[in-house]
Length: 402
Image (cartoon, rainbow, N blue to C red; front, side, top):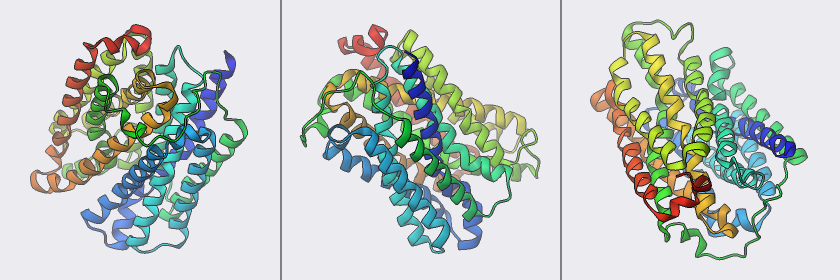
């Protein structure tokens, strides 16, 4: 019993450190815009390149059934090391956007090895309480994604040094993974290569609807994470200056994203006790409402903007782990890793569209209402999970708690 919680702690810390690579370039975007004279397309490209790399990595892994054929721990370790190296290369030797985009793409490929296999490993340690365990893991991922903003908010490090700190944190994650991470007693059976299994998740109603819910969630999540810092900075600029309860825009962005870890924990508790569809529908309804309403605070009292942004940051991620948990419960056991990887691959493909969409929408209607375009995703996700809730397959979720 104690060992599974130790593994949860180690895996969570490793994910927190490794995922600091994801938004490292986004956190230093103001400096890169000045130094490289980046426009909106180039700025969005640095984030989208990671998403595209993640899509390519997860697609390749899913087609090859890599997370089920190879030990998940080895896949995770290789991904972390590759990501740290690509990010360090960008920090040390790159001064042009095309090379930076290629390295950010490679970082995304690496994250495809660092993230889905960690969820599979965690599932081998937990049957009861799996929603809470994967929720805590995704909470660690959330804090890790926000960490570069914390570095920028607390220090005056040049952008290259900020990236190097993120790479150093990832190297530490690799060491922890190599020394301490292992699969648990509920290991999934080994799989043989089967190209058809990459698409099998969409052939059955239960996993398909869980994926549709996840896709609505993902339409909102990464676009919010990618652009909330710019929104907060522009809101202060529109007001004529100020701060967020003593925090600059970077510090406030860290708080908004990192507090999502609290949402992941609460989401796991509620999901295990009351049901997967209950939690996901509540969280998406709340986060979609925040996407619609936060524009009303733009340029207004900073404390009010920060408060609503924090609520959004908590609710936008609270359900994320539960879609993955649902897939582990609804999919054939031998291909859980492939199912998770396929789910995340398609979900992240959608994020490239929503991330790209925000700057032109902001140019057309202003930052005040730019985020409202994200609300359609979670509202459609609610419809998908409501449909899943009414199916017999839902009895397999959370021990019968739908």
